[in-house]
Structures are given as C-alpha cells and as structure tokens.
Length: 246
Image (cartoon, rainbow, N blue to C red; front, side, top):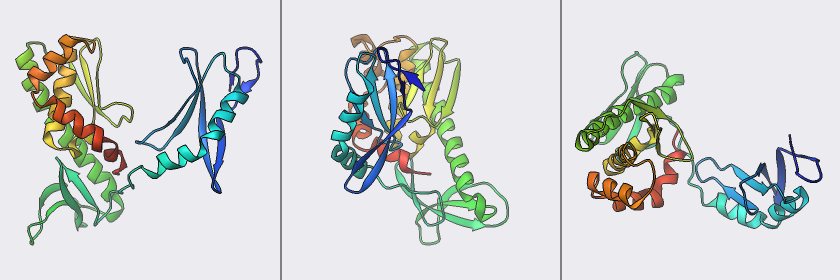
C-alpha cells in the first residue's frame, strides 16, 4: 500500500474499471516524477496501469480511469491473439513461420528442419507435456547464438568489447546496455527477421561508446546498421506481436 501526499490515505494497489459489462483490473502507481495522470495498456502483457503524480488525490485518479473504460477496451481489443507453444502452432523463426511438430517421445534436441512436404517446422522430441518448454529453450539458444555473432561483428567495427551478453524476456524494451558494458536482449528478437535482431545488436553496441540517444549515437548506430530506420519501422508495426508467443 502507498500513501497520498496530502490525505495520507493508502492508495489501493488495484482498482477495477467497468465497461460494457466487463471489469478491467487496473494497477495503481504513484510516481513523484509524474507530471500528470496517465493510463497505459501494455501491448506486450495487457497490463493496465494508472499513474498518479504525488499532488493528485486518489479519487481524481479513479475518476480519470473510469472515464476511459471504452479506451481501455479498445486498446485491449487491438492486442494480437496469443499463440501458445504447442503442436500445430505456427511460430516465426528469424521471421519465417515454422509449425511446431511433436516429432517423437524419445528425448533429443529440438531443431528447425522441414517436413516431408517441405514445410518449415520445429521438430520437438521428448514427452508431449514438455513441448512448450523445449520450444522456448530452443528459441533462447538460437537468440543467444545470433546475438553473440552480431555483437562480435559490431564491437569489432567499433573497437570496444562487450563484457557480457544476457538473454531475458523483457516487455518494456528490446535491449539495454549498462555502464559496465553488459548488454541485455529479449530472446524474442529471434522471432523477428534477422535485420531486426542485427539492428538491436548495433543499437546496444553503439551505447558502449555513446551512453545516450544523441545525434552522435544515432549516427554511430546508422553506421553500424545502415538499415536502422527499416528495422525500427518493423518493430513499431509488428514488435508488440512478438510478445504473444509462448
């Protein structure tokens, strides 16, 4: 529970907003740095968040959220439908759709191959109950391998090494670079076309030299990845959909 600045009454962690017979759970956050009331629907997770500045009372925040029930419903309706990692599902690998096939109950490595008809597939071995985990593990391994290769190329061009590369399942950003030279990436980049993964690798490598988003940073990013704008446009159009897999 958090306390408002003036009333000293606890803010609830969650409220419900009603619209057209539906109830939508809304997380309540109070931020000292916030300048105005904001309502956000994550296209990655579907989480709804109401952010209140310290000087705004909770009642005003609740009223604000309740007036935007229709907007919440519309935003949620635009979210891509989820695709579970199960036999028969189509999952993109480097931008190419692959059908998940439970190949055999005998344990073995998951691999990308083709069916007898020539269709791209992810052949998964082992017990059926473990198909989802094995697909995710495979995709994470492929993502790490591709990102390590891309980072090696870009750091060689830059002349500054990355100290560490980590794969995560982040929802707020596709990659990050710490002041210690640690690069973090979303494994979901392996689902996108190779250009997009290469761009994110170049973007974070550029931060090894320019820890900002200045003109110098963008000039360096474009030098490392000339198709930066094309990759960013793809992420803007289709990036949120990558979070629907698994």
